[in-house]
Image (cartoon, rainbow, N blue to C red; front, top):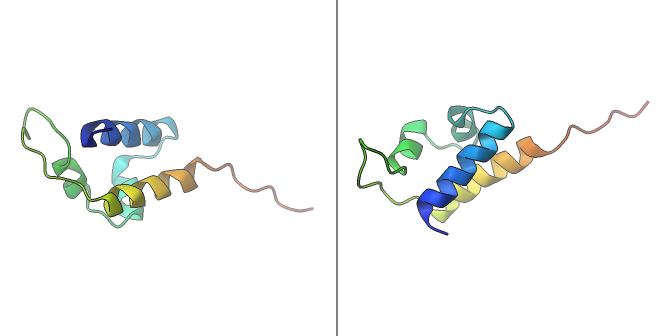
Length: 74
């Protein structure tokens, strides 16, 4: 899996749960501008490489957000 595929997957997961990527990045301690520099686009035809640590941090934030809330004991 290449970097652009991983980033697209992370964005799709965030969108599916209604969480803006800027918020995901904030929770992962990654500046949103840094995230945008990882993406291939018309304005960015030579994206910088994302570290496994950074991508893993975003993945962990999304995993936590995808978990259903715990039921409260009565």
